[in-house]
Amino acid sequence: MLDYFRCPEQFVDLSVNGDLSNEAGFFQFGEGITCYGHCVGGSPSRHVGHRLTDALPRIRHEQGPLSLPFDFTEVVDNLRLERYPSNFRASLDSITSGNAARRLYYSLRPFLPVPVRKHLQRASLSGWEQIAFPRWPVDFTVESLMERVLALVVKSQGMTSVPFIWFWPNGAPSCAIMTHDVEGAVGRDFCGALMNLDDSFAIKSAFQIVPETRYAARNGFLGRFRDRGFEINVHDLNHDGFLFRERETFLRHAKEINQYAKEFRAEGFRSGAMYRNQDWYDAFEFSYDMSVPNVAHLEPQRGGCCTVMPYFIGKILELPLTTIQDYSLFHILGDYSIDLWKQQIELIMQRHGLVSFITHPDYLMKKRAQSVYLDLLAHVARLRAEKSLWITLPAEVNRWWRNRSQMSLVQDGDKWRIEGPDKDRARIAYASLQDDRVVYSLDVESGPPRQSEV
Image (cartoon, rainbow, N blue to C red; front, side, top):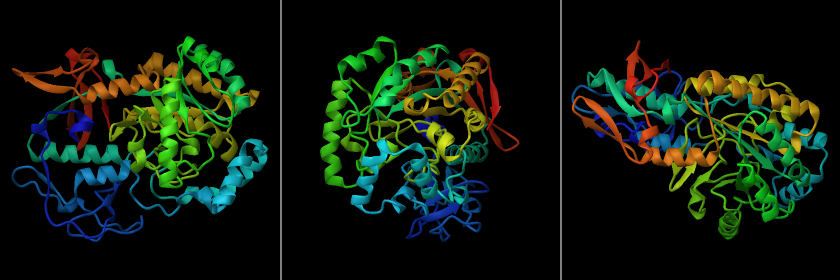
């Protein structure tokens, strides 16, 4: 909680109020918040259901610090790092269950007609609408848990508000990043035109480049992006779906990927098809990763980190994917509009989170898809103009979030001041209660005052 809010330590003092259960499982913490971990005085469930043990009545705050019936850090880590079981894991593996079949599928994937791929993927993703957890279309479990516990802290200690360092620079309400995964030679050849589209709305984006097998991508090609102010990241090794399949092979490939990062001068990484194992990330030498979906109902590997905020995995900063990919929108859902994107954007901005997009030059060449993408760019640009949405590159988010993680609030008489790197762009905010709900407001001396219920 201290890392999330960057508030003074004296405002948050949490403890566990009993012996934790032997087994980890699902439980709830009041209405609408599903947790996974060990809890006190109840029996967590192996599955998400309608009758989960509710831990909220077991809190204690008669005297001293707030005492919770679970380990707060463990539960948040379990959510962010996807350490909870899913009944629908690795859906694509159901039709490519063996190594040989999976290798065959990914070797043929670049050559399969889109209708064939759509048929296979729709079959593998059937039943996604019935997945109860994480919650579609955006899951805010981590944010809700943070805010509910903070509300209890405020009430238990009789405070009026808690000061903290606002999430984004210069008081921006939310942040957005546009990223493009380049999957094949056709997409590679469309990158110049895609940069033109982004530039027409004054939006710079990040291109993720596959270093091996798929297409030639070396200095001459990479330099075109940098010369125009765009960003380059490494996209898997060869995009074959096997990067995280086996630990020993992964470690060997991670060394090769790290070398490509140096060659590309890339700070960030994204795995192919969003396959991931966050417990193995210590082998990477990247500054940040973008491979973890917020809710992964329509990804080959199900799950989700249940947050719309960046978070650290060891030394690596995770920038989660918080909106649907263009391929899934167009070819799985058959939706050629920005209605779902707009819904997700609105929800994320209400919680002041990171709005992150993945689109592919490979799928934006046709006029119908390109028209939808232009609508998206126009909508995001309007939010920048009308609501001060901060649109930037992933590397800039990484730098800001790392600087914020080193900032602290220092009391100066009856006021607070921010110390740490990049403090001039940081703003002081206050979390207070309104009808038992947490509301945020910016310090009037830190920038234009804003207030929003969450």
